[in-house]
Length: 166
Image 1 (cartoon, one colour):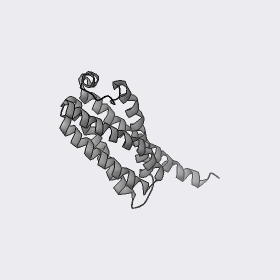
Image 2 (cartoon, helix red, strand yellow):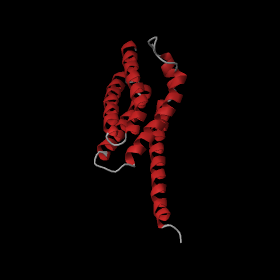
Image 3 (spheres, one colour):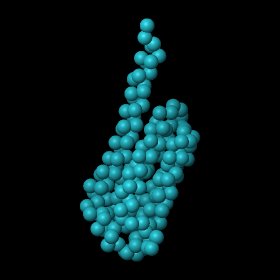
């Protein structure tokens, strides 16, 4: 006689993996939309008057590729845990992703460095909130977001310097 436990668990397992795929699609969709909206970001970045501590342009692609993956997994870890703390953490996760999506077109396509700085400042606040709220649901999720938090903090300082220099 087949086990009903395994039969009942299969749809839940499938649903978990579908949620992860959805989170990955959302995060990499933001990345793709940002890339499409930037035009020639490499040339724009190269032409800016940058501080000495600015990273080379080639570094952004690999860093963001890794970070979007960790953002997705962190969101997935939160989404799969029941409880009242899950909803605020997922709302914060969605807000930070939306603010993240706005930054690239503001900075590169519109060349609105001040508006981009306002956006990234709000993004930094949203990421801090997401880290704190995610910690209430799944500590692994909040730890996965720490590199993102550090990178956004660094990017905010760079955005401010670029705005002031250009």
